[in-house]
Length: 631
Ligand code: WT7
View 1 (cartoon, rainbow, N blue to C red):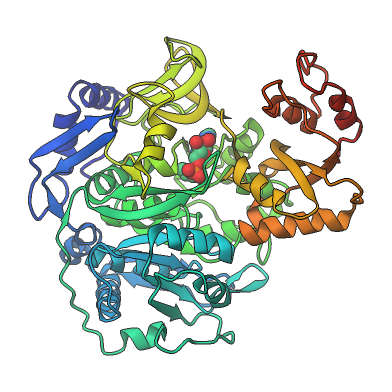
View 2 (cartoon, rainbow, N blue to C red; view 1 turned 180 degrees about the vertical axis):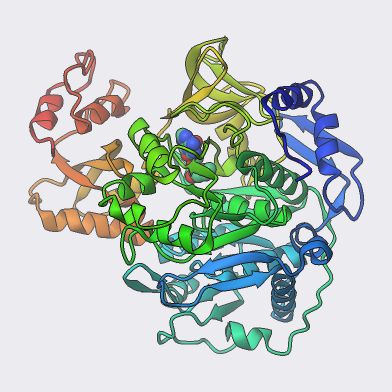
């Protein structure tokens, strides 16, 4: 592939160029894509405003890069392999030609339902091929997609639809995940009662469960595409036009609708895909994420397709029908690059090893990890049992906000170091700083910031540019602050140590504590609550809640269940608490701030060094909390 770096020396050279002259560097990379009109400037930026423009003045449509341009060279090559939840259901293979046809057809259906350039379209669907088609069809006509993970609750869906004022929702009747057959349309129905902006909904038939269709609003997918032309001119987009919005939790307040734009996102996701995974023509690449997360957007759909790759989409879960499913799928489709999350590795590691060894994993060349720091034990297990000691492991650090992989080794090309994400990709300038903003040099540890823009950085928070500035560009002037802590070794390798704010990564999902606390506090029995993370051997972190109840309310497991149901209902089951301790008070500073540090230590059973608690407003509560700790 033309964008690939092939040796460590070349990496060093390219990295140097990318830092010395970013515009020249990215201008050259961008030459590898199809533009309807070239840019006036490669980069204009100001992190104080903040305003970032890549390839300003250029015109393109990302789907011409993901589809049309491959038709002549690899039209009959498989673009998407879809593997169903149930292994006995036939997999689906779509060639680039077929995918192109389906995307154009559905794009025309969207237009027929009234969709226009600039509209926000919410996509709430299980992992079926039509999900990828839906994203691309939106992009084809210049509509902005907002994918909401189909495990989120109706109320989470309401917030996201209303925030972006979506006029169309794409969904399905239901979905399959492991042993579960779950309803999707009924959740959408519940949500749409509170989303006045939505005019139409298109529903894919997947499970055949009973649904109610609202006349004038709801239309079946198969009816919507019937008689639609399979030719659809790609809308001409500015490089800086919005491509999509994707919500991520913040440490406070409602979820943030991160906005990604067309040109830079396309260039960076394809560039990073080809370099990190060292994808070769005819390879089969599989990222196990759900398209509801940024990993799926960038590394199931856009990066691989813009690179002409064959990308696998999996509907199911790693444990169904048994804990060997991932390896069965790797063997079945002869997967060459496999990309998953540490939480999945830790769960699979607990299974009898026969579930791994009975499958032929010899096709594998590269293993990837994403979502949270990978612990040494999981790294070693992955390396020995899945990679058989022969596959480089790329530990890829990045965020919803960064759009693409920022720090990672390039498979087999740059050195890897267990549990280290390792070196930044070309164009990425990480920097470690103290809490006060002093820049740290050499081997050290600190807060991780990035001091120069890269093409796929999110440009704003939808409808709230002020919050974008405050969240990412105010902690340290002139830099993008990641919210993560990291250490750097003498060779410049980075190891991400975890969040330094009130975001907790549970099973690779980013959860803000404040929104969860707010929902708990809405329960009539609850006065106040505080949530912290504690180490969990499969999830990485799990949530521990300290809850103060109104006087006279009995502490009961029923109440614990109610609280968790409330969370599941308002956010989603992923935000449920593993442990709930009822307390009479929370340790607070004299200014009334909850001392989360102490609560974290108690939850982690690390109570020997709680530090000085005498300055607390209510030091006596600490002993009570330790006493009642849930082990
Ligand atoms: C946070 C971003 C980007 C894809 C999935 C998560 C943590 C992500 C790693 C890694 C250590 C990692 C960070 C980051 N994280 N990858 N390889 N090593 N930590 O996206 O939901 O936006 O979460 O995930 O803490 O800030 P996200």
